[in-house]
Length: 390
Image: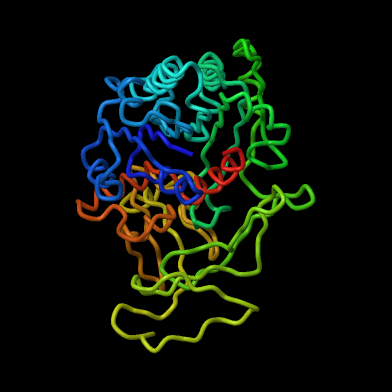
């Protein structure tokens, strides 16, 4: 499948979808620092800066086939941490630029492309303006020609990265042949919401859509109807939960916890049959290579007076995933009563990106890019579900 990436950031969405078998053919990103990262990883892919001046015709001039549009329009006005001005806010209103480009591509190709859209945003998009904003999102996609829409709130901690990161993913299907094959959920979870739209573009009312949106609460695993939080103690300054795999439409937790060595040079180590890998000779040498248990510290705790502390504890328990990365706070980790900030590489690992994916710039930009990004393992899982319809 050929991929058009809008609001590309540093390519976390693109990376995951390519790992599922897709090919990126065009990108759009306005931030100059993020663009340099894209240029390094996708040197031959054409791209554009300002989405407000990008047209569907320009995209098709460089990439005449667009199967999938992956985009995560700015979330600041939809997040519960922001002012919640919604889709009318200065940043989040750029959502309409994304739908404009989709409509222009569909018009220019007589409805052949794109076949699918994947929209990502903060979970707060479901409750913004009491759900009416998400209703408008569904309406816009239906007006663009979507025949089937399905959304899920997915938490990255259940897809192989040790970070609480709940994001809503909306899959909109424009291709009638794919829509006809969607008798079963596109994203196979036992919970979630779907919405059918007639070929003529008739849609549910915004009020009805908003009620459905508020009902969606997917993101944690369930076992016989009871929520089951998967925890695993890591052996490093960062944490990694148990390995999970998609099987028969469900996320299955294996008995092989993934453990990192405490050296950045080393890769993933797997326990097998409850037996740890051979201990390495470099343990205890330079760089503190001895495996350590770690406690996550929420970034907004550090440097504040005690009475201005966070709403919760501000720290994790052993085995808990890291707090959600954002563009403001720099979380920390405590090992052996020593507290230090997470490094950019650790933040990249929390997003499921390769080490030094964002290297070559100031750390402040790298932290922001991680906070803005898409966890690639989640995108990969979504891509694998969509590749069934390739």
